[in-house]
Image (tube, rainbow, N blue to C red; front, side, top):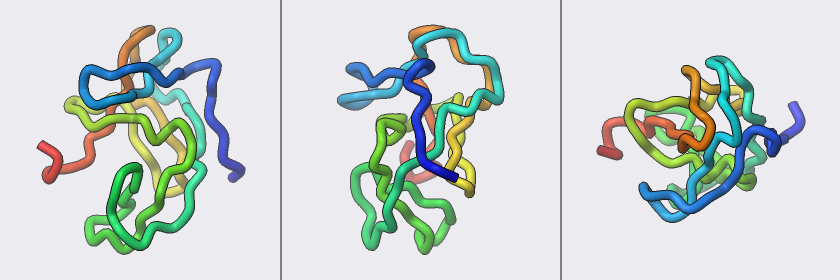
Length: 106
């Protein structure tokens, strides 16, 4: 799948959580595909590195605006193994998009 970001649905803005964040431009129903990550393999952990397994064996540096999705609970978006990003539930216009990075990010 070719990487893309739905710029008509999301925008990068200042986040109260951490620096920059990704926000919904309008109401997004559950199951809305926001894009497909543009990535490159990452050898180490660091900013904008996504782990797709618990061991950190499969990790990618995210190179597109989808990297600005911050950690938060409850999450309202998820990353999938095919590198798509999808809303888990309805998101209000102006709401920050959040992904649960896991137990280590409390």
